[in-house]
Amino acid sequence: MKEIRKVKFDIKLQNHIWFWGVYFTLNFLRWGAYFNDYPYAFKSNLIEFSLVIPLVYLNLFVLVPRYVLKQKYIMYTFLLLLSLFAIYLAKTALTYYIISENIWPEANREYHPFEINHIVAVCIGELYVLAMASSVYLTLTWLRERERNRSLRENQFKIKLKYLENQIQPHFFFNTLNNLYALSLESSKKVPDVIIKLSNLMEYVLYDVKGTKFVPLIKEIDYIQNYIEIEKLRFENVEVTINLESNIDDVVVPPLIFISLVENAFKHGGLNNKNLKIKINCKVIDNKILDFEILNNFVISQNHNPKKGIGLVNTKKRLKLIYKNNFSLKHQTKLNFYIIRLQIPTQNEN
Picture: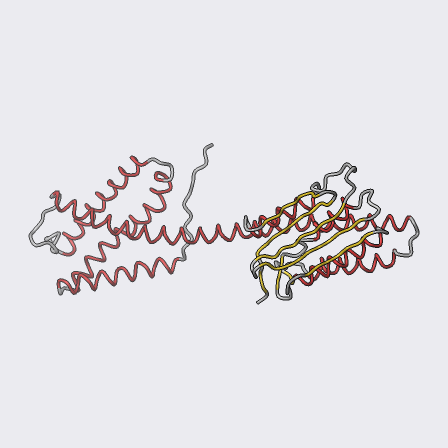
């Protein structure tokens, strides 16, 4: 069965009452002052509004959803004209029998029912009110739908971002536990130190950055240094250098955005490498760009792909969600060094 599209209207009832109340009052005062006949203006507007209000909601609730949204424009036009003619008959009869036998006293001459000029004038007047009220209504509804869609997109963004973060964290701890397991098999005295440092890392992930969109860069650097200390316990010959070339005290970054790059350096640089060297450079360029670069050497003959892995893939997806296209993540190989360079806009703590 073909799905029928519907127009949703959830504007509060009191707003409807306020709109029609204000509109009726302004129309009453306008025509009352124009003809200096407020009793007539009140009665004529009472008849007018008692007919045009049902027409407006008939158009919004019935005609538009059933015909306009389904592209049945001819049927919509026919039913709208039929509705206008029915209102013309009702308005003319009520005016004649309740107010005055002069069915159009606002005109400069006397009109009779069913004269073409009178029919056209009344229908144009009803169309004017219909168009104005419907425009206001649909505009407000559109604004509410736009805000609802914006909120929905924001929630989807948060859910997707959280999903990627949740993938990265187990991936990281899985690698660390593997390291701990390898040390335990050797009955290494380093195991207690690894457990303590791992506990510190888990505290940062589970409590310090939970539900936080941005964290101080200094804390991320401390987190990376703790991770490096754990890896140093596993690799006997590893040299890690961290260069902070700029003042980064006030810079904030998405949590856990760099750790996958560091993991990648250890994971792929350390394979069959008895002298692993890693260098991390972090600086701010022109107070606008945070430049994070990590280099690691690797054994050229080894068969591995440093770009492979869920960590780097998820990092790129997270960057795309947070910064859209306003970031740069590049990688290259020079001699026996693999280099990853990430550039993101700087954001400062307020």
